[in-house]
Image 1 (cartoon, helix red, strand yellow):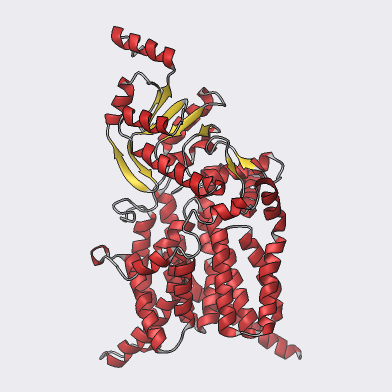
Image 2 (cartoon, rainbow, N blue to C red):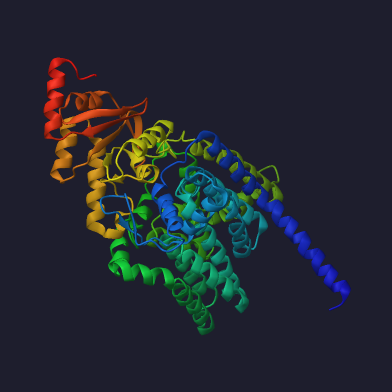
Length: 545
């Protein structure tokens, strides 16, 4: 190849790279805006990551050895069977930078959420064969509430990287199967291994998408063999993790957890729900759910089956709205730019043209999507049957109360915590929380269900009698009870606490107030002798001394 040809190819690549940056810019800038709005409105991260951060802490304390159990989340702790990659990353970030764990869970998810827009755009560009459609796909995904909910929130320290790896992996799979380029086997293998070591649900999404790419573009023994290298190779490369977990806990730790969050095939109700949309609550999230359904009709009529099949497959098999909305963003882009844009150009008195359709679609999605996404990111959207989106599980009062608990209670003290602050409590206090479902899925379906039901029952109690009876029936005997005051959440659903419970606990001979601030009250559970003493003090008017 001559020097002139090399120079020409280099110039062409540079121009294409610059064009891709410009087309990705609307999605990336929208993501930056939403991340900024989220940080401004959340002094603490939304949802929970306390268990994840305690895992990272344990890994650091053990010299980066794989822990066997994670303490404080229910009596005896919970088995450590999570894919470990991001816990090691978080541990390393904390050790190298000294960042507070809460700060890591506020910032890391948003940074990765911006990063995964790059492989998403590249995959859409190659799959759809259109930069404008790839730009619109990325923009819709960037402002989609289901993706924001699970990736920008605290648990995004694990989920957002898993999404990044899986999107990059299916892009590599497209290049492998469509182009028959075996150079993409190694990147596919590496990315599948990273996904396996990060999150099981995203591993299923990766594998399912990979199989569909093979069936659509290849269907040869050559492709089957290379797919086996990726799939089997990724599982084998992750063996140092799963073999050690099985050595500690047996294979049941994986099979038992598989059915606790819907399981494979748990998305059949989700597919049905797509056909029953409440028009009275139609907002950005619902609009972005409706358009893909119209797009599926268009694509089927055009006999273009890959996107509709991919949409139905991830909805049924994975059953998580974030994956359905991801595929829906592809369908939305195709439908708006090909069908709606063409109809506007053909039937309007004003000639829209292809460039005008692209511009209008980008402006519309950016305007409406950013407005809706910003409202969602700030928690101002009714997203949980009357409860706000992206709630903070803890606030300053919780942190203050948890610091008190760590300083003023024995290391062996046990607590029952009402409300979602419970998820953060063991990580913040290093005290054992007797009731809570987090991490218990690794013990199996029955223990997980028992803990989940008990947590919800305890959190709904509004009297001392209810609290005592509920705990007694399950044989739970804590040293302390931690109660939120005012507004709090239970499994993301908002509750409003009146003073009834606190007054009932104050009057009960079973409990004594040991800490209180504007948002939290902590009661000590008294023994028989202490109860008699409290009755005597109350009778003589000395209860407040």
